[in-house]
Length: 140
Image (cartoon, rainbow, N blue to C red):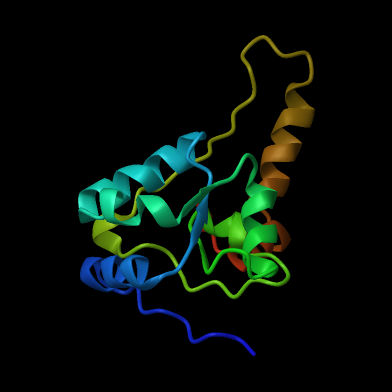
């Protein structure tokens, strides 16, 4: 039986969800995890939830912990959490959202400029955009 999804639509709702969770898996030793920890600080919950945090060593460990029921919540990049066995609640509220932007460009001295341009064109294709959206990300 799946637990009801917590409401995280506003900063106050996210704060309540974090405070009510029994356990929270994340990956603080990463760039994205550092942003998660800063969000906890901005919400003023860092100290209160510290005892519930499960610091994982890799993104897959967050997924496994939540899928197995070892952690009630997983907090990390939405594309990582869009995995079998997990029910994604959604992104942080807009006021707390920190977008990670990926860019691509061929190197000026590359000998494979046409291949690099072909890869970039492929990444912008409708098929790839559909995959990006299905993983909870926003294509640019």
